[in-house]
Length: 262
Image 1: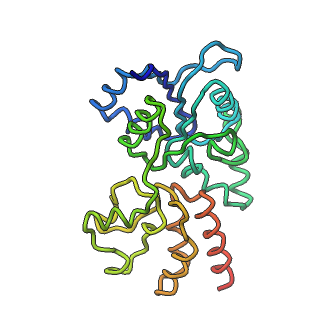
Image 2: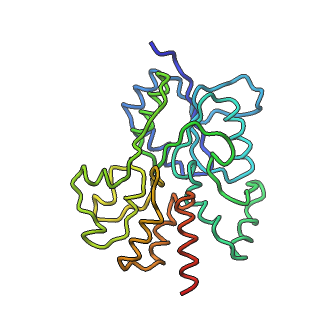
Image 3: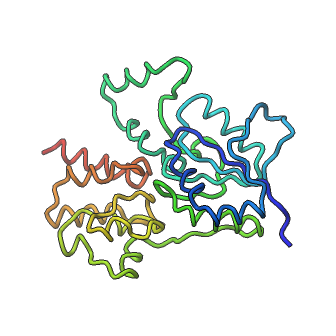
């Protein structure tokens, strides 16, 4: 019999959609709650506080001084830390502002309400503390998180799909939107987990689950441009919820330089 775990959910700077996805699972979450002590947003006071957590689930980017302080305490007091969602793993949509350097935007970042103490950049959890496991998506696939937490319950290291969205499309029999319609699609370089939601509705993948393992983003971008897609919309496609992921961010900068030369 597996011993009972304490699982704590922590929200940082995000819309809360990933936690909402977990809470919407209903019976699956109820079954897990019978096996673990599930705590939503426990107060974190001091590092030497007595309360400790077997598993901490962090949702949201680190965007304020308070976020940075809390994630340090969460790490110190948790045996296993899971970052969930595009905000926690790549900085989320708010991290796209990191790539802007115009004076007006920089001035706006420095003029938030004083009590927020906004950081210079919005960053993923792993930029501040060691993360044991990352679960991607915007929002996450809650079923994946249930399986990850169940693996932790039985002291197994969790695993998720390492293949791309293209594999999900093939399994579902979806017609390739790039081949058939010439649409921009990040499916070949995006981690599976969404069920190929956008291609199933005749739209290109937006990369919500972030780059897949060993993704050749540059190769895909070069092929799309060689096939006639203009650099500007290709760059826009990369700048979505996971756009701050290094593999996407590097290619966005490369495309921006190419556009500037035109």
